Image (tube, rainbow, N blue to C red):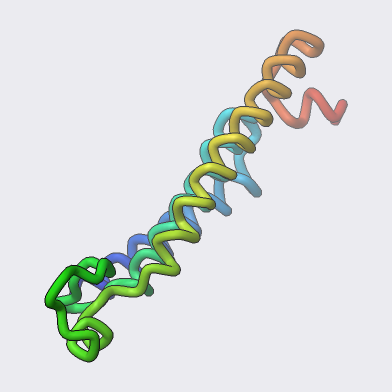
Length: 118
C-alpha cells in the first residue's frame, strides 16, 4: 500500500466521521469537532494529491538542472492551499466556539434539540 493511497483513505475516513458528527450528534461541541474533522480530511486529501513518490522540495537551488527539477519536484499549489485553509479553519472555529459560549450562556445547554425547542 502506497503512502498516497493510505493518506487518501485516511482523509476519506476523517471526512465521513466528520459528516456523521455534524449530521447525527446532538452536542454542539461534537458538531464543531466534526467540522474540524472534515476540514482536516480535506487538507490531508489536498496534501496527498500533491505528493510525488521520490519528489524533492519545490525550491530551485544553484546548479540545479531545470528539466530534472520539473520532473522531480512535488506540487507546491496544494501546500499553499492547505496553509490558507488552515488559517481560515482556525478563524472559523474560533468564531463558532465564541457563538457556542453565547448560546450556552443563554440556554444553559449545548443540546441542539433543546436550543431549537424540540
